[in-house]
Image (cartoon, rainbow, N blue to C red; front, side):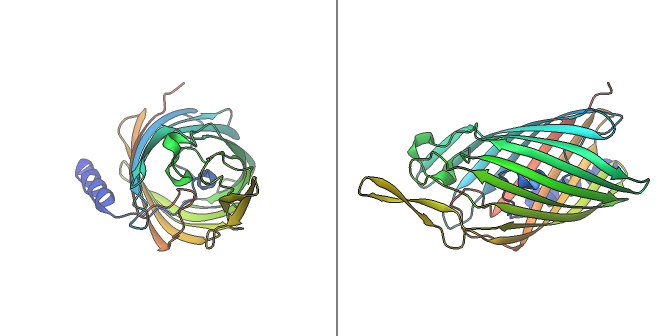
Amino acid sequence: MRHLFLAVLLGVLFSYSAYTQCSDAGACAIGGHEAEANEHRPLRIGISSTHGSSGKTDDLRYNSIIADVTWRVDEHGMFMLRLPWTRSSGPLGDAQGLGDVLVIAERTVWSTPTLEFRAQVGGKFATGVSNANDLPQAYQPGLGSNDVLLGIAASMDEWNMSIGYQHPFGRSDNAITRLKRGSDVVMRAGYSTDIDAVGVSGELLTVKRLSESSVLVLPSGGSEQFTDVPGSDQFQLNVLLTATYTVSADVSLGVQAAAPLLAREVNVDGLTRSFTVGIGLAYSPAL
């Protein structure tokens, strides 16, 4: 019965046209539970694969392999490291390579038997490729900026909520766009429960870019000039569905899908998706 339920659930998620509108320059990792280790299994090693499309506007297709490691140092704190490899293709060509490294540290600052508050701080580092095959920024595996991430998360029984902030520094060295992204504020709230060996969660996630991003225009008089991109300070509202199946004491299988309630349309940074599905495995040994 459990295996039948899992098969049905996987089929529903993978046939669903998800529209992930997360500015996943890293801010959406704030407050998430999918990468958490626990005090009994302090180490978690994960590998996941996602496939997505930006939609008909520019018809970009993305495939990513993401490796992540989460280490709980004690009952109150943990670290998470994430590294993606991405391949994109579209009308102008193909680009592939390593993406930007994401590092997040989390610490429980206050807790009771039913309520917990956690503080999170991290960074996204411009380790990714940003000039592959001389294509625009939207094709590139890396966003080309070093970003600071800050967040506060709370959980009470099956409920969770969080707010996060991401501030990018500098411009991408992409020769075509020289993109400078605006800062993002991310808020999420969700509910999770267990159905036999399957953990299921649903979340509302919003992303608000605080200012328009800017890109390079044709040089004039030998100096670079930049212009803001209209509509690039979009507000996004999404529904996320995650399911995690306990394969064994050490291994779990997860799938995720998302759908927009308010969808973004500007894709100058390559973060827009009109269709995304993902699946991942996690190994958590008993140390």
